[in-house]
Length: 203
Image: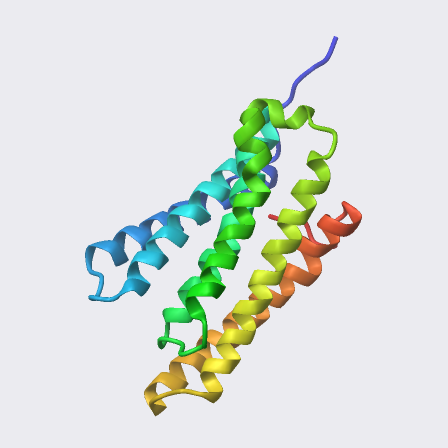
């Protein structure tokens, strides 16, 4: 016989943390969408918040739920990176990079290639594909590259700030984004994608 026991309180909290963060993302997205300014950055931020909330929820469900939850989580990881870069091309100031439209087409085109197997085999059947673990690892690497690109964009915008007020905002974003982005990429995403063993777990 197997006797089931209640998990300790710390384990329950650890499991709930991603869902709480997902709710925060959802609330921020709804607040910005409700009181948004008249620019495109608010729409991209709303999409990023909803995408992040859905990704976190699917990630939690993948631990305990059906196989398709894991497929949904891995598919959404392809999208979060391009949305992050797109948002920082518009905020805190609109970036005047040349060929920005072609860059965005490339950023969003690569995820279409990454999730194409899911479109063919479905969320449930994709897990039977022999090469799917490699595709999932590529999605994590792509997310890591995009998060590092966000850090580069923040420092680029800081050096090319239009007004002193914008520069002070970018300084705060660059500090927080740089520490967060580099830490997540170097300690979790890339080790998991390359060695299947993150140095720090996702939670």
